[in-house]
Image (tube, rainbow, N blue to C red):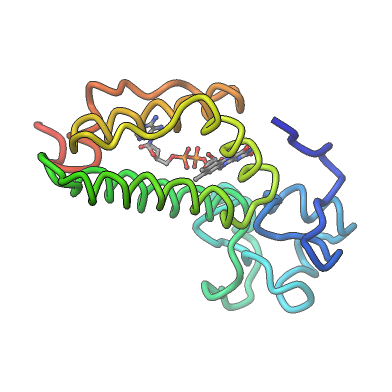
Length: 175
Ligand code: FAD
């Protein structure tokens, strides 16, 4: 997976810095901005934004907080995984052939349009040898979990226990 060097900001198709391909921290470094100057100039996730930085990172900033800025790579990722896992959790138990075909088409098209270029390329590579298992809700949920885990592994994150995917994304935890 082609994760750019910390201070390198990937460019979008117009040759402009790509926010949705960059974590907030890397963006700040790459643009040579201090946290104090970011909010108005770049419209990036603001001080105290729910994503990007730990909640206490900007706790001394007295300015009003904004929550309507473009997403960075990590917020985009979290939101997208929520969508993908929830979609799989609500997929039919017994899909028709047509539904299975549609879901396969959706996942392959999704991989072309995901707005983090190197994430999208990586997913396209994965799909060359690992097409979605669309034969049932359970199989699609497990496939999605494995795909997410392969990204987790590449990023050095802990792997999720796929036996718990329904509790996480469908039924809620059994406390
Ligand atoms: P996320 O990984 O976003 O997970 C959100 C929540 O999902 C977790 O809190 C957990 O409860 C649950 N979860 C975690 N793993 C699983 C699983 N296996 N199955 C079910 N639920 C799970 N970032 C990069 O830096 N490089 C990439 O190449 C890259 N590729 C991506 C490809 C796609 C298709 C997507 C959607 C995102 C990609 N990202 C990539 C973003 C990255 O995966 C994370 O979303 C981002 O780093 C934020 O991570 P996070 O730790 O907040 O939790």
